[in-house]
Every structure is written in C-alpha cells, then in structure tokens.
Length: 60
Image (tube, rainbow, N blue to C red):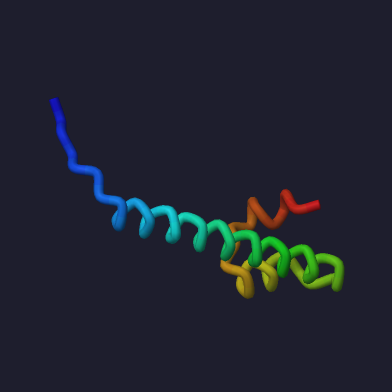
C-alpha cells in the first residue's frame, strides 16, 4: 500500500499552477480569436500564441 502525507502548502501550489496554466491558455485562445477576426494567417497565429495548429484550426 502506498502512503503519502498530505501537505496543504503543496496542494495550494499545485492548484495555483494549474489555474495559472488554464488562464494562460485562455488568454492565448482569446488572442488567437482576435487574430483570426483580423485576418492573420494561421501560421502567424501559431507563432505568436504558441498554440498548436490543430487548436487554432478548431477555433470558431
């Protein structure tokens, strides 16, 4: 059986980092949507936002 000790400080750090990553991705998607509306190429959007091409192609 595997036992691990729960550490609230570590749990808060993990939760914060996951939230931070989600926020960054949401911001990248928002920028990509704006760039699509402006008529920028998918290649340029991928380069600027660091999003995968598959993600950009799936944006409405």
